[in-house]
Structures are given as structure tokens and as C-alpha cells.
Image 1: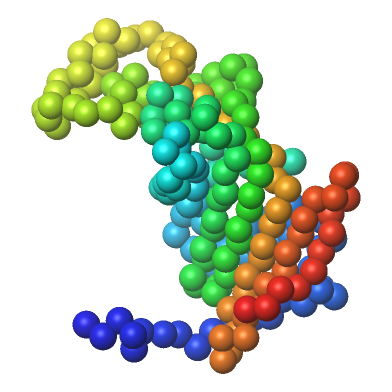
Image 2: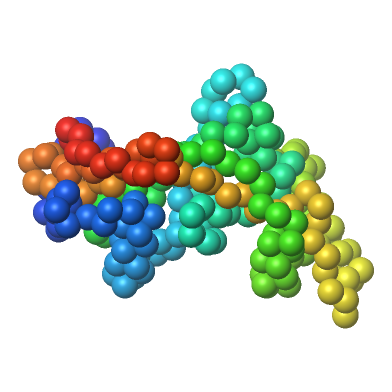
Length: 210
């Protein structure tokens, strides 16, 4: 396979200072809706980047579950990303919607969501997913797939006919943004890149080179 020869000539859109929304969160919502309308698979899939105790970066895909003034996702607090966020509460999230030739990068401070909101979301999840949160000690070693399946069956029997409580080790995080970059692919690699940065309570906006 000749990787050097793989390339696309992006030409599906443009991103101009005169047409973007003044508020980056509103601009994100506009693009997110357009990604949903375009039937992008899992438009809420985002690449979460964190920094560990060894100062090495780590990344994984998680799902955006809510956006207002913050970007919210849920996970096991004992997972690797949970430990890294406890150590270093700055993170970035990246969305890539290839069908629209668009990318959004967002950086900011992360904190845990309230127990009330985490529990509220937990009980909206499918029962199977609720059980999965109890079964998986996320990011820890397990002896086999069979162990997980056996543990699932045991808990399904234990909670049969009962409401499943939210595990104390599971819940939500909110990323409070202070930086956005909206990227629109353009021909000849002269891509559009518009950056928003927080200055006090206001957002500044400018273009950067592709």
C-alpha cells in the first residue's frame, strides 16, 4: 500500500469569518446539526486526549452526551482516563466529520458532574449498559472474556426485578472550553481554520494558516 499517494481534494465547503457565529458553542451546534442531517455515523463520537502522571498523552474515542456551556461525557472514574483527569484536569476533544470534510478541536478544563446529574443519566441508559457499568472495572486487567460474561450473568440475576443503582465509581465529566478550532477542508490544502479563544467572559476570533 502506497500511503504517500492517499489524499483527498477537499471541496465541499468553506468557513469564513463573515459567516461563522460569534459564539463558538453555537457554531459547534450548527455544525453538529449539519453532521446529523448528513447522516454522519455517530456524529457525537469524539477523540478525548488526556495527560498522565508520566506526562505522556493518551487518547481514546468517547461519546458526547450533552452540550450547553460544557461538553459532557460519562465513564468509569477508575479508568485510565479517570485517573489522568484526576491528575491533570486539562483535556482536549476532537470531532472529525469526514463526510463534510470538517474537524473541530476543543480544549478546556474538566471536572466531575454532580452525582444527581450522573445518576439521572445513568437511569436513562439501557438496562444492559447499566449492568455493564457494574461488571467492568474499566482499564484493569481481567483473566478472560468468560470472567466478564459470568460476572454479567451474576449481576443480572442479583438485580432481577430491581432498579439498578448507579455505581459510585461511574459518572459524568464536563469539559469547560476555553479554545475552539473549526477546520473546513479546502482545495489545494488551503484549508479554512477559524480559532476562538476565551478572554475573560468574551470570545476572540481569528484565522490561522492551514
